[in-house]
Length: 173
Image 1 (cartoon, rainbow, N blue to C red):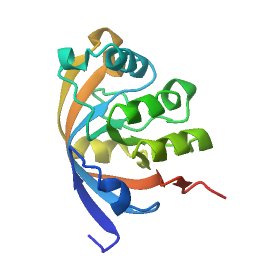
Image 2: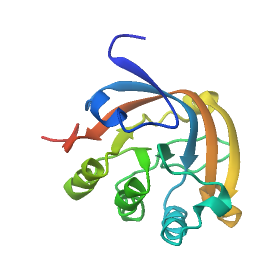
Image 3: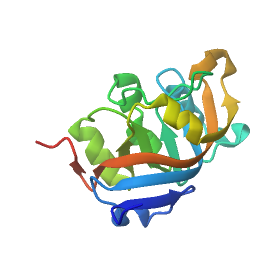
Image 4: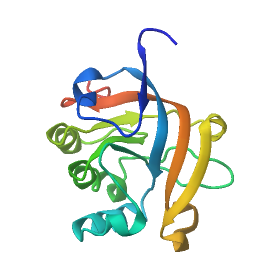
């Protein structure tokens, strides 16, 4: 591990926001959530209704990985799809510290991340590597959505790069 690579373990604290810069390389360990297009609006609804506890979901200091979970492994989906990106501000307000996926986010979303002390990280689409770094997975909610249901993963040394923080993005031209 070089000096640029940092290690994080969930749950994450508020100091994280000031200690990471756009372009930092990170190895993430601990429990993270996995969800994408079909399930994230349902999680938002549970949050707004104050029902996250019913499913054992604690978004404070959490990471949400924009992915499906299947026997083939896990790999990031495009975070800038409306069904995902439109949920990022509310999930950040709810306590999510890192949104993990791929693709460029809009300026309004990057501003919302900064407002709520959250950030966005990208992960290379390497399903086999991530499969070997996923220690376990547990279905938490919406099993009828199959691989797009909401899962809790236990991960070890997930590689990622901070892509948006403090109102800046690696995609800024």
